[in-house]
Every structure is written in C-alpha cells, then in structure tokens.
Image 1 (cartoon, helix red, strand yellow):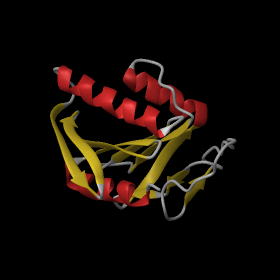
Image 2 (tube, helix red, strand yellow):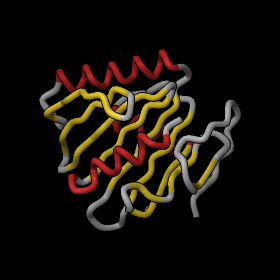
Image 3 (cartoon, one colour):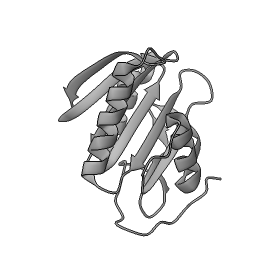
Image 4 (cartoon, helix red, strand yellow):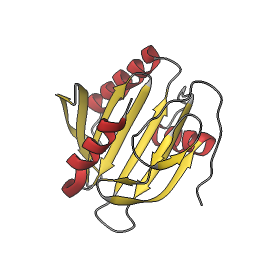
Length: 159
C-alpha cells in the first residue's frame, strides 16, 4: 500500500484522473497505459530527486512514481518548488547542466508542446522529457515505444 503523506499549504490537483492523493499531490494510477508499480512521496521523494541531481534542491513537495513491472516502463518525477521563479530557475539549471555535459543525456531538444516549453533528451535507453508548469517541475522518463504517450498523459494533467 502506498504511503499517504499529508502536507500543509495550497492543495492542488496535480494530475487528472484517479490517483493516490496527499493534500498537495496526486500520483496517477497509470501512465501511458502502464500501471503504477510503486511510488515515493514527501521526504522519500525529495531524497530520491536530490540523489539523482547529486545535490540538495529546494522543493516544497514531490513524488517519484514508477509505471510497469516489465518493459515498456515509465517513471514520473514531480517536484513543487516554492515559487514559479524558483521552478523556472531549476529548469534553466537542468538545461544548462545537460548542455554542458558529455552524458548521460544527449540530443537535447526544446520544443513547444501542449502550450508550454518541453525539453527532450535521450539517455539510459529511454526518452526523457521535462517541463515546468507554474511552480511544478516534471520529468518523464520512458521507454521509446511509450514515451510520447507518457509525456502527453503527464502534460495533460498538470494544472
């Protein structure tokens, strides 16, 4: 059973449709047709996101969700920064680090999709997309065959 962590502050619906909710975030039950395999929220999610970045990141809340037990699989990393400005800066820093790096992410692209700027990159056998909507920063990692649908599902529900 997934742990529910109540948080204070503005409650908002993160992704539309049924999900496992805290007062601030909703972890969707599926992504690109893949069922939720497991998720982390609150402090556990923060620790995982910071581990992936290799540094502390100022986030107010977040979740990490893994979809599908067998390929094709997808992951969804969502963090809520303290402000839109802070989230914008986080996306700019990620983009700069990816551009300046020799890996693990390559072929960085920027496009407009779903009425917002979406960055895409390749790495670790998956397609990765990231974007900002308000104070939310979203990273979608998915096997190529389901990557575009995973992005569409994530982008459609961010409010």
